[in-house]
Image (tube, rainbow, N blue to C red; front, side, top):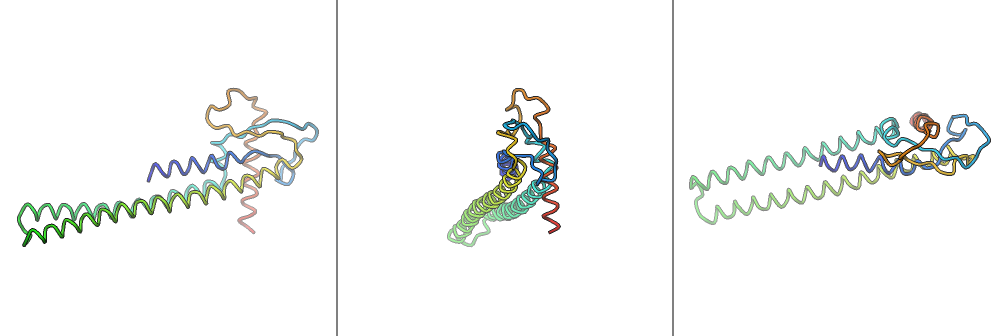
Length: 193
């Protein structure tokens, strides 16, 4: 489940960042110099994901859901382990009235194990669907913002810098602060409305 959470946050970040493709418009509450068009810029993906309030809230929600699902599984797993230990102790002590009673108890444990596996698969599927819905919402949020941000067509290309994927870029091409600021202003305004 922790691995799923890490993947969820990474997917959340990638989904949001990959859609960060068009920026800088007066509609976003920022002033832009006029003139040149066809510029190229980039946004630091890590900064976008760590500073965009909407993404941070969704990441927290995913972490909470993951923790809840993990607790459910751990609780069921612990109950199953205790039941298996009890069965083994009774079996070794000869406390079952008959072989059939021992087999019935063993079958019950196997059914519990299958139910636990089924629950685990269901929770993973549910978490994946929730993660996808959050990723879609984040991607939509960033895409809509980027359309407004680059309404004047100043930028021909806005890239997401993820890790070392850019070997070199001049700092003046980094518009991360503008994008994060605009996204957060827009999000705060939307929360008030």
